Structures are given as C-alpha cells and as structure tokens.
Image 1 (cartoon, rainbow, N blue to C red):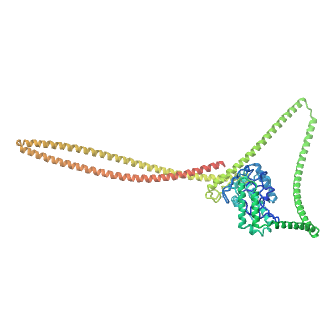
Image 2: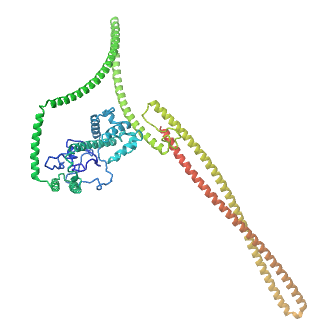
Image 3: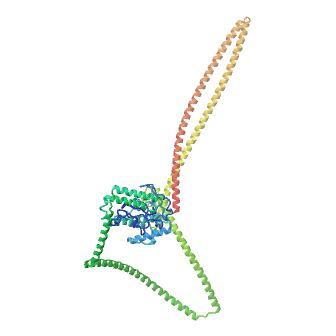
Length: 640
C-alpha cells in the first residue's frame, strides 16, 4: 500500500510488500494494539494517518491515483501468489544515489568492518556485495555465516525465504556492479535494511511493554479477538480500496467493540488515571529526593566518567590516526620540498648563466626582431600545445568512457561465454567435455599479463578442441563418402538389374509376338485346310454324281484323298500341340524367373534404400551438429 497503514496484531513476521524509506512517523505505522504503550486506564488504538496533504517517499515512487478513485489491488487474495510488478524507479539516478546514501549511513552507524566508501557503493564487485549482504543479514540472524561457495545461489535463496516480493536472478550475481544489475541488487539491500529496522522496532516494543501484555495474552490471542480484528481489517481495507484515507467511524466501532469485549468500566478508568497521576507525582518527588543520595550521585558520576573515558579513548584513537596521516603528509611534503629545493638551485644556476650570457652579449635590432619572432612562435606553439592537451584530455575522457563500455561488453560476453561453456559441458573442470582443463574466464580479477596468459591458454585449449572436432568431422565425412560410394554402387547394381529386367521383358514381348504370329499362321493353315476339305467334298459330290463314269477310280481317289487328309491333319495337330507345349513351357519359365528376379531385386532395393537413408540421415544430423559446434567455437574463439 502507498497510503496510511492499518494497525496489525501480528508480531514478528516481515511484511510481504516492499518496505518504505524511513521517516519520523514510521514508528507509529508498525505498532499494534498489543505492542502499543498503554496509558493505564485508557485503551489506545492507533488511527491510520491521513495522507491527503503529505505523501510519503517510498521505493515505489510518488502515487498518482486520486483520493476518490478506487485502488487496484496487487494481491489476488489473502495468501495469493501473484507476481508483484516492481514499480520502484530503480533506473532513476537520483533515486539510486538516495538509496546509496541511506545504505552508506546504515553501514556506518552499525560499524561495518570492511572498507566503506561512497565510490565503492557506486559499482561494487560481487565479493563486496556479498560482504555487505552478510553484514546486513546478520542484524536479523547474528549466527548467520555466508558459505564460501555458490554465493550466487545462496543470496537469491535467502531473499526468497524472507518473502522478497521481487526476483533477483542468479545470473545478476555474477556481475553485481554492472549498470543494469546494480539497481536491482541495491533495491534488495534497501528492502532488507527496512526489514532489519522493523525487526528492531518490534523487538524494542515487545521488550518494553512485555510485562503489560502478560495478563492479556489469553484475550488477544483468542478466537473472539482475532475475529474482531479481521472484521476491522477487512472493513478498513475495503474503504481503503475505495479511495478513502481516514477510518474514524471504523476505529470508533472497533474501539466500542473492544471495550465491550474487555468489559471496560469508564469510572474505573478515571480512577486509574487519577492513581496514575498521583503515582507519577510520587515518582518525581522520589527522584528529586534520590538526587541528594551520595551513593547515587557517585554512581551517576561514575557513569558519566565512563562515558567521558570512552569518548576520550575514541578521540585519542582518532587523534593517533590523524597524527599518522599528518606524519605521512609531512614526509611527503619534506620530500617534495627537497625536490623543489634541488629544482630551485638548478633554476638559479641556469638564471646566473643566462644573466652572464645577457651581460656579455650585445643585441642588434636584427637579434631583437629574431627574439620577438621566436617569442611569437613559442606563444603559438604554447597555444597549439594547450589545444592539443585539451583535445588529448577530451580524447582520454572519451577513451575512458569507451573503455568502461568495452569492459561492460566484455563482462556480458564473458557471461555469455560462461553460459555457452556450461551448455557445452566445458565448465567446471570436472565437466564432461573439459577433460580436466579450466575453460572458465575470470575477467578483471588478475593483472593484464596473467589475463592474456589465461586467454592464450584457453585459446590453445579451444583450438585443440576445435582440431579434435574437425578430425572427428573429417572422419565422419570420410565415412559419409564411403557410404555414399557404397550407395552409388548399390544404385548402379540396381540400374543393371533393372536393365536386365527390361531386356527380359523385351524378350518375353518378342516371344509373345512370335506366338501370336504362329497362332495366326496356324489359323490361316486351318482355313486353307478347311477350304481344301470343302473343295474335296465338292469334288466328292461331283464324283458321286459321276459314279457311273468311274466309280472305282473315284473311290480310290477318295480313299487316297482321305488318307492324305488324315495324315496332314494328324501332322498338323501334332505340330500344333508341340509348338503350344514348347511356348507354354518357355513362357512359364520366363514368368517364374522374372517374378523371382523382381522379388529379389525389390527386397534388395528396399533393404539398401532403408539402410542407406538411415545411415545418410544419421550422418547428416551428426555432421550438421558438428558444423554448428565448430561454427560456435570458431566465432567465440575469434571473438576472444
């Protein structure tokens, strides 16, 4: 919420919403009916403060919703798990500087043990961020110890366990000081500091007012009180979501119900107030009288002297440190004084020599003109050199900016390289493809010489790995070529068998044509024999008619003709049967051989095609994967 907060009865669990910047009225925002200081006879319930005239500064920025407009709830319900959008202006430079100042003040007040400076907090390293986080978290858990390994995973896990409403990724921990990740990490630290301050305020209230709440624990933790508090909270939250800022009517109703539940007697309250006033007067009188006690005076003096002694000791330590700094400064100044004195002596000697030279020589007008000309040239040279110096300083500034950008890009590329190396199982040293080698790049952790040496070592290892991949690629390529040659040979065999099959089919076609022609010839011969038989029968009828003219001769001729006819018919039938049997056997043999050959060729072609396609697909997939790996390695190696 960005307006007045309602009183809550819970004590100890941190809020799931992001905390606000501390202000003077903050203590009253986190008090509860249980932890609020009682007034001995009057039940005090804090009222939500009106925020119509003054807005609080929060990490979420200024709120622009009007007082009369309904609010959009970021929670889907009690206990909802909907992700909350981070609306804090973390990319606003003024806001970031304000957070850095608050962080610096907090660490200084709590006695941060390490080296602390505002410049360091502008862009800290991962190690420095972990130290600051560990110090802040120890304010909540003094027994906490940060592990030495996997701190990039430990910090987000701790924030998630504390119900930090936003996400701090593990990848952001590798480059905390980068401009795009430091604001998110700084926001998480400020949220954690708010949690620490809330925990302190609740602890102080519980310690201060614990004895007044011992008798009322059974009442405030009971079902009736919880039900009443939930009704009050729901009603106030409903009005808050409708745009209201004050809840006087809800507070009055809640107070009346509490008085009814606690059986509050107004007369008893008035008498208790009177007793409280009398006891307060008595306490003041006794305190005034106790000041005359010598033992109490000595004790007070002792406490004051101890406080003064502590102040003097701290002042002495500061003086010693200041003295050490002054001594260092004095030694530096003495050294500079000696150097300046030697330079002064040399300049005096040079001045004397020039003075003698000036006294001994006489200047002519030409010499004066030459000296003036040289003076003008020297002045021009000085002007030109000054301009060159300004240009050089500007160029240096631009180069420094470019260097910072290049450094940031190098960090991003190093992160991408680490991610790719982990994906390729090259990092850590115990990875599958690392082979015991260290492929991890640690930019800006060592000097330039060791960095270049480490880079050269990684490049050599990558070149070796690339050469191994190329050898494996060439071996697979040779295997692919051999498989392609075998496939071509099988295809050529298939083509030869196909040609043989075409020839066999051509021969079968020719045999079929020859059979058709023979059948046609036989049909023509049968027609001829039928015509001849018909002519013989006609001749027979003529002979029968002329039986009287040569019966015996005709009978003999008829017998001879019949014998010749039967003989020719028998020979023709025998020849026809022989030709048909031969053609049938030839056709059957050719068809059987053709079917067997086709079946064998089909089985061989299917088996070869299946084996060849499977092998070619596997080889192409392996070769494509190796090409992509080789291309990525080559691009990364060239980028390094």
